[in-house]
Image 1: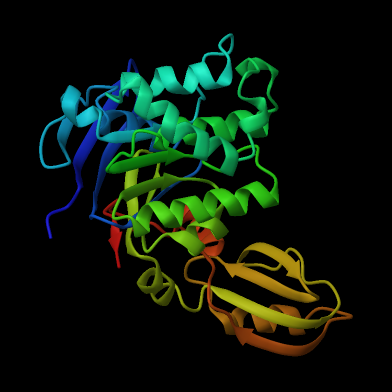
Image 2 (image 1 turned 45 degrees about the horizontal axis):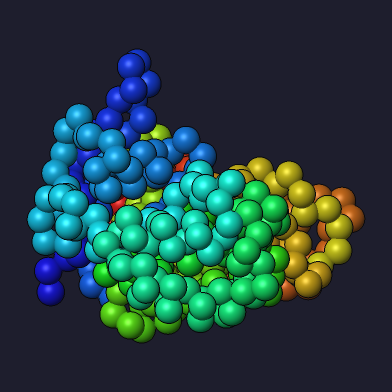
Length: 308
């Protein structure tokens, strides 16, 4: 199966700032692909090069079978990190206009729009100006603008921003439906639990490079041993070799630094006054754990991407 998107060794500098140094990944038809990384890592710049908003200094890009042109752009839906609705227009007018820019005729756009507005609880607000809507409503409107022309490739940057839990679940449901309809999705988000729920494969970008790339399940297996679950009493904070400690439902979850063994952590805890351990076991690392581990130093020393 030929990939929908191929990004190979992209590089981009803005003056003296090297925003992207070496980013590569492929996205296949019908998958939800996660593009991850800390703030400033180069995710959004990579997306903008992929979509021909920025020109790459170096590297190769293929989208929907070739180089980007206007016809290809009409086959793509893009939800940018910086939202772009026309604030002074009425909601319905703005969404129809944006759909016509993507090649949809006005009649078809209006017919499709009614269902979307009702589903996302915006129908009663359709005659309000965009600037009069809440942040959550504007976010849902932006999702409609991304999907109304029924694109083959959907690129969504922080799709859950500003949404309450109920609307987050609704957008997650819509994302799954788009995948079930055979569309390809690239999702960039900081919400790792959403990535775990939705994405089969990911690329993690750090300091302008792809440092982790592959199937989520395989990546988790590769990082087995990088997390510990502990139940007990006492102080489990600030343990040497532990990058992050959090408590969930009374249990402690410890994310380990690269090269730190579980027995090292157990010895440190046993040596503490007032610590009593009822259970100590290797936990499956979450993507949060892996993200922290990689960003804080577990990327290969030669800078090559770690493939699962």
